[in-house]
View 1 (spheres, helix red, strand yellow):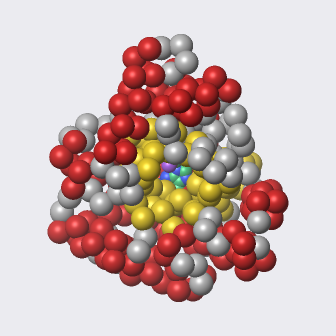
View 2 (cartoon, rainbow, N blue to C red):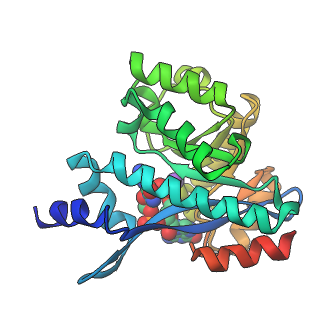
Length: 256
Ligand code: G
Ligand code: G
Ligand code: NA
Ligand code: MN
């Protein structure tokens, strides 16, 4: 596979870096944080997005290194933003963690080192794990989750509603946040059942003491419905696209 070789070569060349998509709080109406999303500045193919990168990276195991690079760079960015804009010290950064990371015995240690090296506090970090990954529990993943919790890092269940996890698995998983999958959000204004699914996921999250992020918000009507439902956070093209670290910092500065 050509692209596998290219990913392998691109990692030490620093061709991978994060974009940042703003997340807004519906209660305070302020910027609450950012999700880091990988981008690839490929020397021949140009600018590539996660759907062109993640599947191959996962198949080849290169995702482990890639995720860690993205987290390191995103934490570097957050660290310098907070140094320059200390009033934004409660901002959160969510970083995606591929399902396969969870069973790597050195995951917790690697995360600890990234936080130490960048000077980022664990309280500013959320790790996003997809709903389908929370079902994969083994000794290594349980130990990782325990250590991650002990460090004070929060967990978010990503793409909720698309996987097959049971409510019992969600209850046992130590997440503080649930993200409603954008497929439901995108249909909620036209499709009654999607609207009811968003309402149900929001209620479920709240009854398990989790906060709820709706992703993929693209219209004003979706926003109005999400406010009525009582959703806590929103992210999507209606507000902002994923953006460069420079543009993201402008938002941090304006907020502070
Ligand atoms: O940005 P885009 O919509 O193309 O992202 C597609 C998917 O890729 C999203 O589900 C997102 O969670 C995932 N993703 C984006 N960046 C990363 C990353 O750095 N690591 C992992 N594992 N997944 C990512
Ligand atoms: O859930 P996940 O982490 O897979 O989703 C993040 C991806 O969704 C990113 O790649 C981002 O570019 C994309 N995205 C963010 N906001 C929107 C939106 O409002 N609409 C659509 N279609 N995609 C979005
Ligand atoms: Na995500
Ligand atoms: Mn998601």
